[in-house]
Structure formats: C-alpha cells, structure tokens
Length: 167
Image (tube, rainbow, N blue to C red; front, side, top):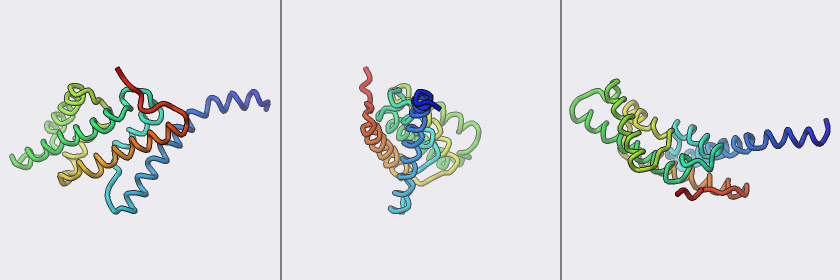
C-alpha cells in the first residue's frame, strides 16, 4: 500500500487507539494502586467514565466538576437512601427505592450542574451492595480524583486541552 493510504488509515485509527490506550491505562493504574495500597479504587461506573473522559474530553460531561461531583453526589444520595431504608426496615434493593435513587441522582446532578451519566449507576450500586459509609471516600472520591488527574496528565502529554473551560 502507498504511504498515502497508510496515512489515511492512521489518521482514522489514531483517535480511537489513543482513547483506548488512555482509558485502558487509567483503569490499569487504578487497579495497580488498589492492589498496592490494599484499598478499593475501582468500581464499574468508572469504566463508563473512561469512555467520556478519553473519547470525548471536550464534552461538558467529561470535565472534572462533572466527574468528581457527579460520582460523589450520587453516591451520597445512595448512602442516604440506604440509611433510610435500613432505619425503616425497608428492602433497599426494591424496585421503588432503586427508581427513587436514580431519579434523585439525575435531578441533583442537573440542579448542581455536574451531570455525569456514569454516575447515575452509583445509587444502584450502593442500594444493591449496601457498602459501608466510607465507600464515598474510597473508591468514589479517591478514584474520581485519580481519574481526573490521570486524564489531565494524559491529555496534556498528547497536547490536548483538558479540562476545557466551560461558560
């Protein structure tokens, strides 16, 4: 094949490969740190955060306020509802509570302007797994902070602007 064809192929494949490398690298680093520090820094919604942060870094949904704020806020809502359920002797993983939790999470993220779609799963995670209250610190807050820092470093290394100042 000619150099022209290879250049076109590379131009088309470079952004997806770069995003995949960044996302995979970020998750691998979180997993390694989790093992080294013997603390949980990963949770399933972070996988979806990778898609937004590395494939769509200029999206308002990928900005630090949204990633950190969305994850912490929805986890706090989940923990509050979990406490209420346990206090009232109600099953936290019932359809009604799960719906209320996600609905409150979406409304709160919108009201506080920190919408981050992957964070919508956090209240479900909390009500279904019933973690201890410090779950909001690790993996949620610590993991989200590390994700943002790693995203900043990665995008800066590629000469890309992140975070993007939103008006």
